[in-house]
Image (cartoon, rainbow, N blue to C red):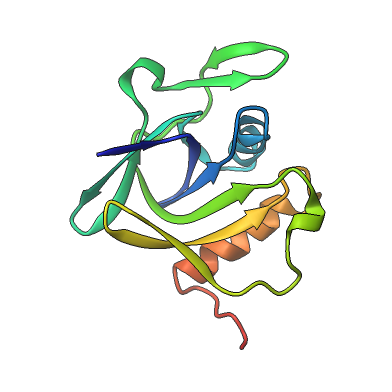
Length: 146
């Protein structure tokens, strides 16, 4: 098992990781994704393991079902899912200028499983839609034109 500094949000049978340093907007974005129909798997730290050839995310026991809402506090009661089959990693950037317009495909390997990775600015007005598109690409529901 590997633990990373990231949030995990599930959408049905698939999940995404939101990675970034403290204060980068991980919980803010996770909260918006949950409000839009996602389910929180973990906030701030995520345990990763392999089960049946899939990269599986869970929350460390001490913080399971909890989410820090900056400016309010730590809350329990958001839509939650105990396990997520991770399909995409999103690295949160502090400046939208850090994101290439037409980036080359990137991936990262965790526990021996490679998943696609993308950079996103968490405060982009269309970030939720961009996450949806990247997840659809990762699951084969959409194709990237080359």
